[in-house]
Length: 155
Image: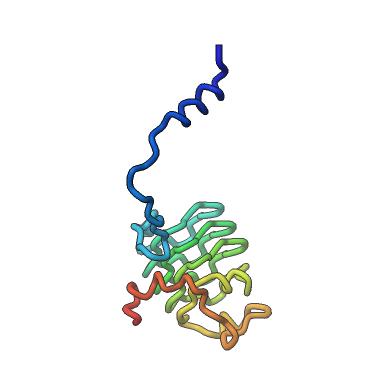
């Protein structure tokens, strides 16, 4: 009696080859996706610790004093959000949109996190300058931030 792996592999060998050429898969950087989570207008003092909030939309939300410790905020829209006094310790901000975002008093935010974020502008530049080792003048927008150009109507 053949074992399960042998049966599986023999089945793969009998599968027909694809007749059409396989196109390059579409990536997130070339096609917008629907938000995985849409924050309410008021999410003050909420606990998002460790949550997967990739593609989340916090645009215009008040997340003052919320806990985002070790949350995954990759590709999240944080534009016009109030993150005042929020805790972003260890949060992943890869390609997260930070545009006119209130970061006053934010805790745990590092220059390494900002290096991967799409920092377009903030409401208070002093908040960023208070981050150890971060310089707004030396910040370079990551190449993948073009995903937000349509959202911001930037050409």
